[in-house]
Image 1 (tube, one colour):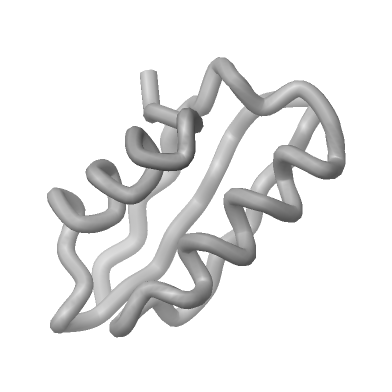
Image 2 (cartoon, rainbow, N blue to C red; image 1 turned 30 degrees about the vertical axis):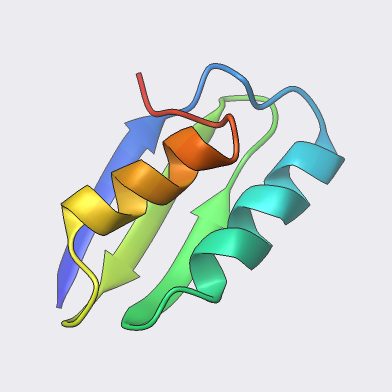
Length: 67
């Protein structure tokens, strides 16, 4: 399993956190997603078929691009 923690500047509230967690959680291979509105930090753990390119692409698509 691969884990990555990163900042998402567009996270501003708990609704943003919910959106990020829900969208990433639906991606095949994603095992867990945690996000914090105060720190704007997101941690994602995944296995194949998910990879960083797919995760980053989805975040950009929903307007929560990682910094």
